[in-house]
Length: 257
Length: 216
Figure 1 (cartoon, each protein chain N blue to C red):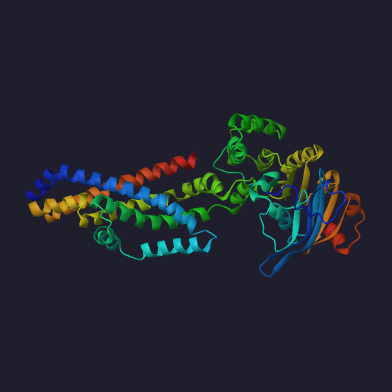
Figure 2 (figure 1 turned 45 degrees about the vertical axis):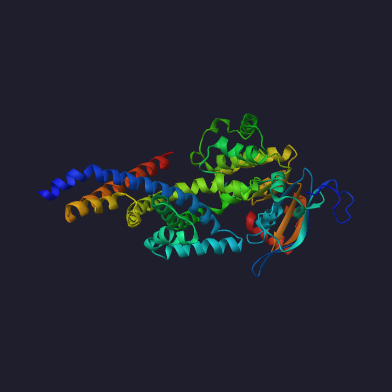
């Protein structure tokens, strides 16, 4: 709703580069404090991988960014503007999300899954949406499944369709919430390949995952979240090879053994 | 012997009543589904006022006898200046009543859809209403079809109460024949049989649709 005036970026010099700024984010479920003041800056075209033990607040953090979760304290800025200032539906068209459980619409075929949001939210003409859907489906290697229903697809195929569906809205940022955790091991690679391709094309990405190989190859930065705070962040080499904090070391030892 | 011949003679007359019963039921279910869809959604609303209002509606209409409701609409409302002919009055009362039951069915149907479906749709920028219309309700209705079929059958039977306000549906016509022939057993039994045929056919149709949707 507000494009310029009410901008408060906290006096950051390189504000243009920063697409998302999270400041002192606090999230509670009842009495349980899941996020205890998280600060994070995401630069345009950056791929950030978020790791950490389950229950540490990784997914919750992602879900706050597109307001699937309400938060109780702190601010999130998109392009320097508090996300509370945006219309929530407009905000979400700029932020794509991919879920652990795919969440394809089972009563629609692949094409319908893809064109629903562009035609209903952006009023894109249907033939234009179909062309776009075909282009994205071939990009994720599933053009031949355009008429298939979700139940006819493998887990990996479902997730690739879900990624294509999110890309239909031409988001500026993509959130991935454990995109490969529900997949059989042999199907993980095909989804990670699509995500790598996306990162290489310059998409800004926030990825919650346990795939350390992916983190090493793709991440510009790794963020380690534990017990509701960012314990440590840095390049893949810094975090994976030379972790400084005890919790990070323990977590990595457990996950890599 | 008289009993059988009287039943056969009045059979076409009764069948016309059965047709009226079906129309009455179909209209009422139509109203009930529309009403029930909104009230069912209202029962899940985060807006407290809407939530209470819809809950009160459901509780009141399920907690009072249909015969009383029909009487209020047909005999009671004229005192407030709203005069309805028997047929519209019956459809109104039956529709309002089934709306309450269908609201509960719809509510359960919506709740049966995994939360992720709603979140995925909202994350794409669709509004709450768009999400309901394109994502949640189509899936919910597929799930609740058997329950809606049951409601249709229940209402087919309950519509016989419309006879008390003079709607010439099956029950009313049967009573009319009895007042002329005094063949209480054969005529009432004949009516029961016709009701049974109707509900049996409806349940078969519902099952057929269900199976087709399951394979679709």
